[in-house]
Length: 470
Image (cartoon, rainbow, N blue to C red; front, side, top):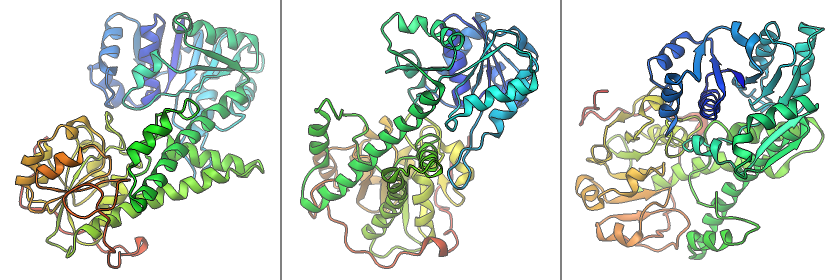
C-alpha cells in the first residue's frame, strides 16, 4: 500500500521505517526542512536502537522518502497523523496540530482513502477529525480510524514488529479492512489484533499507560516500606511477578517515571476522568506521588553528605529518563539535579547518549565523556539511569577516583557485596536499613532542605576538570 505519515517525530519516524520494512511505500511529511535534510543525509534527530539501519535500508530500496509538502497525499491509500499532542497545564491534550493536519490533508486526500490517527489523542478525536475533513471537502468519500502506538523508547523497533497486540479502532468496515491489511505481515505470524470502535481504541491507550505507571508507583511505595521493615524489594518484586495475574515487568523501583508518555498520558487520563464526571482517583494520587518521589530522593542525597556546601561535588550517572534513549523529557535528573544545585553542590554528569539533550536543561552542570571522568574527585556518586554501561563499571576504579566513598544507586544496578568489596558505602532502594559499607543503609535525618519555590541560585560549576569536546 502507499502510505503517507504526517509528522516526523519519534512515532512518525519509527512507524515510517517499520511500515516500509513490511513492504509498503511510505512518504514521511514534516514541515521542518532542517530535520528532513538531516534525514536525507542519513543522520537521525533522535537515538533509537536499530532505527537508523531501517531508515537507511528503505531509503536505498526506494520504499521510504521524506517531504515537506502535502502534495503527494493524493496518491496515498492511507494517511497517518503522527504529529505532537502537547499537554495544557491542566492535563488536557492540545489537539491543534492534529486538527491542522486534518484540514491540510483534506485538500489532497483521494476518494476512498483512510485517515489513521496514531498520535495520542483525547477520547472522541477520531470522530471530530471526521467532521473537520467532511467540512473541508463535503463530497469526499473517506474513512477515519484509530491505531494507537505502544512503542517504548529504546525498544521501539522491536515493539513494532513483535507487539503484544495491535489495536484497530474503526467505525466503518473500510477503515477496519485497511488497517487489517496493513498489519497482515504481523498478524499472520500470530500477533493478536483487537478490532473495536475508535472511542474504545483511544481509551485503551490511556488506560494501558496509566496501569503500567501505577505498577511503577506501587513498587516504589513497596520499596519505601521494605527500607523500614528490613525487607528486600527485589525478592518481593520477583515473587509478585511470578503471579501470572501480575507479571514481572514494571516492578523495578526507581526515581519515578518520566519521558514523553507516562507523565503526559497519566495527566491526560486524569483530566478526561474529571471532564466526564468519572474521577480517576488512583491516577490522580499517582501523579502527585511520582513528583514527590523525585524530591524525596534528592533530599536523601543531602542526608548522605553531612556538611554539603559550595565545595561539595556529586557525580550524576544517567540523565535520560531511561536507558537506550537520549530523551530527557521529565527525566528524574531534571528535578533532582537543580535541587542539589540549590544547596551549592557542584554537579559532574555523564550519560552515554543524552548529554546533547540535557545540556540546555541543566545550566551549571559539567558534562564528561566517560563515567570515570565524571566521578573523579566527587564526594558522592548518584546513579539515575539504568544504562548497561554503568552495570559493568569497575567499582574499585570508581572508589579510587572519588574523593568520598558513597555510591547512591537509584536503579539497584549493583551487587551489594561487590560494592562493599570495592570499599564504597552502598545506598540503594528498597533494602534493609543497616549501617556500614553494605547495602540497605538507613538515611540519617537531614537538616532543612530549601523549599522548591525558594531555591537559591545555582552553585558554581566545577572548574577542576574540563568537559570533553563534542
